[in-house]
Amino acid sequence: MEKKNSKMGIASFLLSLMEWTCLITWQYLAILTGHFVYDTMKSAHGVLPAYVIAILVFAFLLMPVSLALGIADLCQKNRKRIFAILGILLNVPVLGLFSSYLYILAYNYFR
Image (cartoon, rainbow, N blue to C red; front, side, top):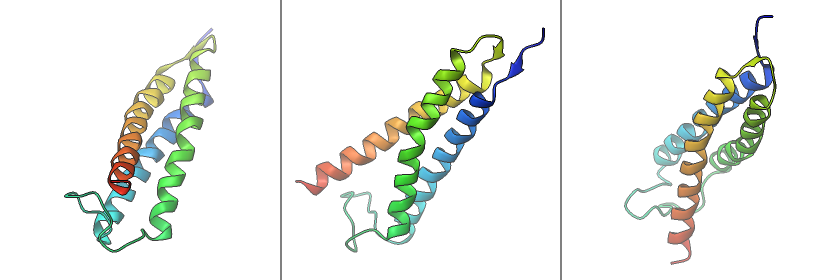
């Protein structure tokens, strides 16, 4: 019997790609609108616009879903695991980047 690609693995991979897209878009928009300065990591013009925050929240909500789908796909038998592994491998750096963004922003906010 030939192994098939799991739909959960493909979903995990696609959601991980969406996370990368959201984080890159968030960073680009924050820099473009002048709200994100690399020197101090503080807002140069006050509060970020709602659409920039919405992109960041959307990426944050995708992370556990993508990771859970990848792990669930790895537990299935008689399925190809390439998309699940790719989804998890793409998800872990996004989780690290998101955590570091939050840490830097919180550190500078409460300083």
